Image 1 (cartoon, rainbow, N blue to C red):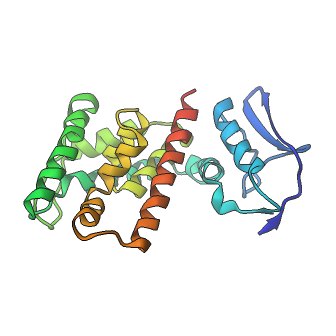
Image 2 (tube, helix red, strand yellow):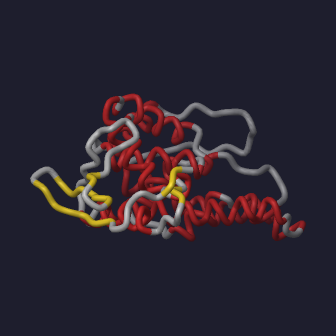
Image 3 (tube, helix red, strand yellow):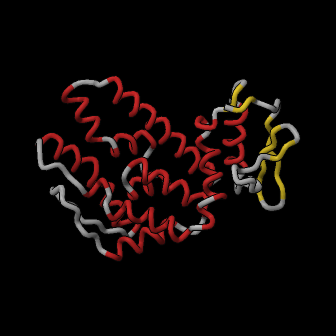
Length: 231
């Protein structure tokens, strides 16, 4: 890890957005692109991550910095492909694949997931089929097209959506979190319902719990990122 080379972290506004400064140095992406952010709130999240670093810079601890860098260095140049990748999570969405047994898990999935799919249909216009088979099912092309449309034209938001969908295994949950329909805690509980059911049934595995705890923290960080984009 690189040694910390700066003392103060500040943000400043310019004509095209907000920048972060490490002392007098303007922060750039790993590809050396200017790190110009669309909202002050997002710039503050990035600044806070840099300010929180100790004597050594741990880039893995800076999720918001990674997301904005990905948006500028990668996603901005491949928007159509990223929308397609995001929509693909909807075509094999976690919420559509239900357990065949046991009955308590079947009931938990229906109770947790059915309302989100109903919301997606009524509020987003995305209709997805549900199966109790392990075999993949083909979703309608209209659903894929709608998900691409909902992903939008903003590289920062699309980066967050794509990252969230990959983390949760669900484009629908990613959109629900982005639009404030569910909280980070609800997103975690819904996306990892099966894991939590296994823990409830068979007991806690410490290694698995650490993984889940880290994911829960990442979901909260993504929610902060999404909220900051909208301020």
